[in-house]
Image (tube, rainbow, N blue to C red; front, side, top):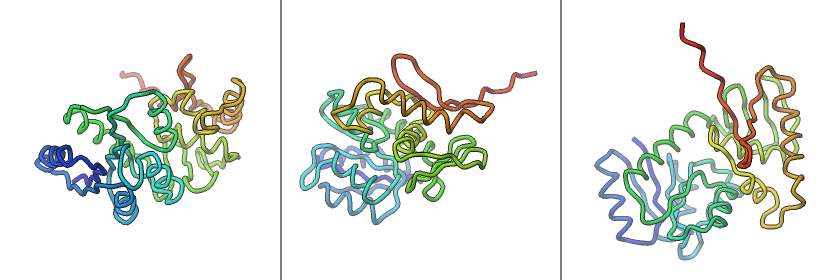
Length: 231
């Protein structure tokens, strides 16, 4: 069973979510304001959180930031909003959201996205450690290892690596990483590439197969090893 926390102040939408997800076997809790939602998310164990942005008492962006930074909680967060500006999506991802869906949305699509987030999290999360292939990254300290060999990370390269692992194998856009590091005032254009280069020096240089892949014009991602050819 998937345990889901809905933080949403629209009673009609909450009722629709209960009507759709409970027959599918989900176990649901809900909160109608941000402070209650933050308390429930930190005091209980959930497989995923559906988080509205426009909430009374504590907005969704601040809730997500506190969940990640203050409580170090890695639960997958899917943001729900009636707005669709790029800046909102970038800020949400930079604060630790895992996915973003604009209202009105298809409940079937929402179900598919939740299942994908839960599968991804179950495959990577091990007691405060994110795992991707032969890479292990600590979420609470700038520490990581590959094939059991420790990597020398700075706080900046650790932030970049966490973002890439959480999104893997999806692409993390350049704008998302810039906002993660510098907010809405990024420095000159080459600064991010310098930090990505520094991360590559630790993550890929002394290993047979590189993990970081550049998606030209978009951003970066962690790749998977190719499947062996069938005989």
